[in-house]
Amino acid sequence: MMFALFMIVILVITGFIWLLDILILRKNRAAGATEPALVEYAKSFFPVILVVFFVRSFIVEPFKIPSGSMMPTLLAGDYILVNKFTYGLRVPILNNTFIKVNHPTRGDVFVFHFPPEPSIDYIKRVVGLPGDKIRYQDKQLTINGKHLDVQDVGNYEYVLPGLNNMTAKEYHEQLGNVSHSILIHDVVGNYDADAIGAKFANDEEITVPAGHYLAMGDNRDNSSDSRVWGFVPEQNLVGKAFYIWMNFDQGSRIGTVIH
Image (cartoon, rainbow, N blue to C red; front, side, top):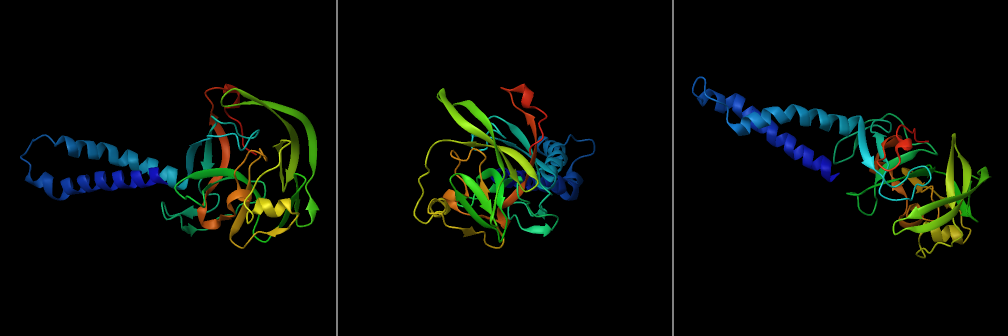
């Protein structure tokens, strides 16, 4: 969000200088005089910034994965592309939808503005849609009274920052039309009394409010998600992650389609 604001400011400044030159400055320059450096830079950068701003705002935006909360689907260090028009075209900064296209579907990996601090972008998986009734008991999801199908894959070993070796159980989970992997650790989460995670721990069923989504990380026991800070409002949506375009440490991940 801050980068978008920065680009708008630069776009306005360079555009204003270029327009000022066309309407006033150029007329007062002597014939054959060299353009001021500031005007030359503005004319050079304005079209480039305009194209980049348009593409990032309405078509596709790159993001870097900073943590392992979405393992094994996404790893820290993955550079991903996010489709910005899948969930509708939105006004930059304000994030109001002006052209409606689609809504998130269960199983989507989506980027959104973090509800407690909208200047930060988060990425999780859509688990609950508006109106869904959800339980999460014994580390298994039940949506609208139906247990999700999971298949045991085996152990999944990875290294956390600080060279701490971790072992989790990997499962394939069928979430809507999406089959994906999740990681489960033998730990019990600690949540505030009014958090969704605490309600799940008490075997309570929660209902996703209208215009909101329940988000969870694929690394289920190492993810700060809706169980901690609540539902994701529709107005916070950024886009749908669909492609890994770079990972400097693991080149084999380049070109991976995100499911």
